[in-house]
Length: 84
Image (cartoon, rainbow, N blue to C red):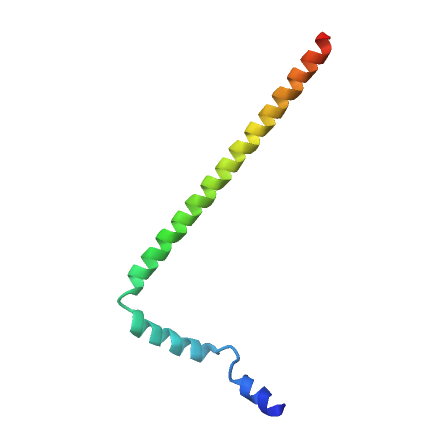
């Protein structure tokens, strides 16, 4: 049991120095493609936000339409019942 604990000890989160080494290696490998990658991620986020806003607007319009229809039905219902 002690051996399994020691075996998993090296799988803990990297410290500050390890993250710095990982970052340097990533920059060396992907350095020339990083601006292109960042641009595509930015475009993707923009499109995602547009989609979220469009969905929110359409749901707001739907809720408004339903409220208007229910108000119209309620007001026409009271008119019909008062005329009888």
